[in-house]
Image (cartoon, rainbow, N blue to C red; front, side, top):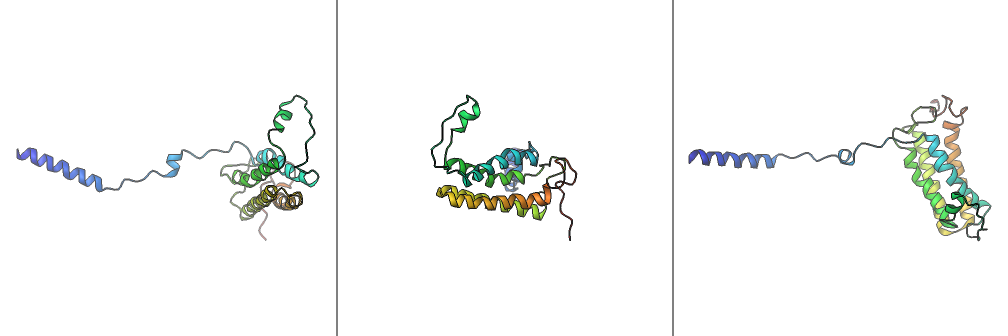
Length: 187
């Protein structure tokens, strides 16, 4: 009987001791799975998201999004789905793409077209990205107010945000030039 009582006591003490040992919490990275590898280069993000969406906003300079659209149908899927959203909603969606697309630009592991890592850790590149996010927010506010003059003015911020980054990181020779995506020399 003593052996049984001693075994029971030992089992209870072991259980109590084990319950007092903190169990490490699973980190968010472990529970979320591995970080996704970017599917496209920085140039592809620019061509697929920034170029078309910036141009939708620039179009407001010449065309009132609230004006009735002329119906034309060539039978293509582009024409069919181009009418899914209209007017100011298109401008709002484009501004959101520019604003939230910054997170895609700054995704770790993104490369440039020439194979170099995108300069996401460079302070000036990060500033250019913040400037784009701010420009997108200004454009979004203008689109939500449905004010063509404000939206047209907002394109200046977008153009500046684009060109400030392009001057440093893009406009250095042909698309595959090794000079592209290279930080400016320190002065």
